[in-house]
Each structure stands twice: as structure tokens, then as C-alpha cells.
Amino acid sequence: MNQQQRQEIYETAKNWIYEAGSFIREHMDEPLDIETKSNPNDLVTVLDKQTEKFFVDRIHQYYPEHHIIGEEGYGDALTEVDGTIWIIDPIDGTMNFVHQKRTFAISIGILHNGVGEIGFIYDVMGDILYHVKRGEGAFKNNSKLAPLDKEKKLEEAIVGMNHFWLCENKLVDYPVMQKFVRKVRGTRSHGSASLELAYVAEGIQDAYLALSLSPWDVAAGIILTEEVGGIAGDIDGNPWNPLERSSSLVANPAIHQSIVDFIKEGRK
Ligand code: IPD
Ligand code: CA
Ligand code: CA
Ligand code: CA
Image (cartoon, rainbow, N blue to C red; front, side, top):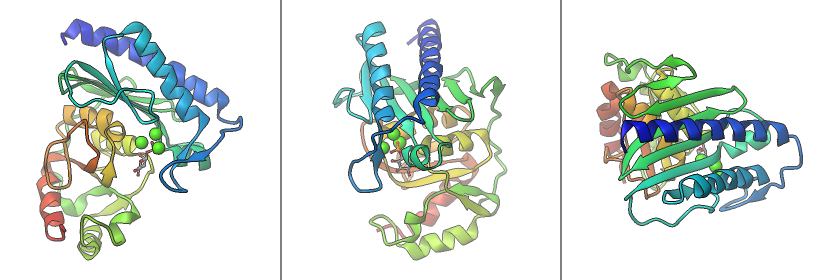
């Protein structure tokens, strides 16, 4: 993908995101037809589905040769990363959307031959768009995000993670994670993985840890954080695979290895 193609797709996608955001704001107080998916707390609403459908229809119309991975199933089942792929989470933070009516985002990452080229995370209620074109800077609305602070220490880090790390889980012995939360300065749990990653890119949070996430939760956020020098992958420090669900660790480069080492102590 050359710079001109990247620019054209970026402008188009950005307009669609603002359009989808307005649609969500206009319709969010109507009945949401809430359903559950894998468990009673895994929610999906009519607006999750309509928003994904909106993007998929537009992509089919404007870029019929592009591929799509989307949470709500309107995309393609891909086994390889060749060509241009849009990775879409129409509403990231559906529980926040349903219960809190804020702190949810439209998240779209666009890859070409496996390389993250464009990313958008749109905080719909805050009207804040985090956006990136690879090699051309990461932005929060019109402000360019600074490279991440290379002097950051783990003791001074704010880490995004949820309570599941402190319960019995399949990946890590939780007493090690209890030690971890005492080691860092503070933890936060915002309930939207894409926004957590945007906060890492913005430098207001220094890492984000998740036990299990899908490509659409993290695609845009990884492209965004890598642009400002962040390191993204799984909790063992392996690189991100855009076709697989996995654990997730996205961090300021100064503390990434310390977190991998810390977790290793309790890794099952
Ligand atoms: C969820 C959110 C949440 C994370 C979950 C995700 P969804 O995405 O990102 O913060 O903890 O694992 O599934 O379902 O609201 O798009
Ligand atoms: Ca979901
Ligand atoms: Ca999500
Ligand atoms: Ca979602």
C-alpha cells in the first residue's frame, strides 16, 4: 500500500466512522434488543450488529477486493493475512454501552499483507478520535501523540487490567498477579480494550494486560501504540497474530520486558 492509497482509505474510513458514531448516538436511547452470546455477561445489541453491517456494506461497495474480520460475523473467515484486511469492532465495550452509556468505542484497524497501516479508535460519547497512519504519526483528534516516555519505571506505572487476573485463571498463578498489582503504582479497568490501548498510546496509562482478546479488540490499538514506540503482543512477549485470539500485553517499551518477566514467575 503506497502513501496515496493509505491516505485515500484513511479519509474514507474516517468519514464512515463519524457517520457511524452519529448513528449510534442518535439511536442509543431506543430499545437495544440486548442478547447474550458466550455467557450471560457477554452482551450484544442491535446497534453492535447494525454498525458492523454498515461498515461491511460500505467496504463491499467501495473496496470489493478488501477482506474483513468483524466481531459480529458479517465479515470473512480468513486463514491468511494477504491483501488488505479491515479488522472491525463496531462497539468495543458493549457492557459499558448498555449499562453506562459511555466509554465505548468504534475500533478499526486496517492491515496490508499483515502490516498495520491505519488505525481508528473512536470514543463515541467523548467525540475523541484516536487515529494513525503507519509512519505518519498517531493523533488524538488534531493533537499529535508524543513518543512514549523511555524513563518509565514499573513502580511508577499505571496498568490497565481487570479483576480476572486476581481470580483463579488458566494462564497465571494469581498470587503472582497480586504481587504485581502491589508493585505498580496503580491499576485501572476501563471496560473497553481499544480505549485502554489508546490510553497507552496517549501515555496516560503505561500498559494494558488481558487474559484473552480477539483481533478486533486490539488491532487498531496495536497500530496506534506501535506508532509511538509501544510494544504489543501476548503476555509471553510473542508478537501479535491478527488471525488469533490470545492473551494481550501492550506496554511502554521501558517496562514491557519487566512485565513479561514478572508474569513468567507465575506462568502456568
Ligand atoms: C470487550 C471489551 C472488554 C474486554 C473484553 C472484550 P466487547 O469487547 O473490550 O474491555 O475486557 O474481553 O470482549 O465485547 O465489548 O466488544
Ligand atoms: Ca462483544
Ligand atoms: Ca471488543
Ligand atoms: Ca464489540
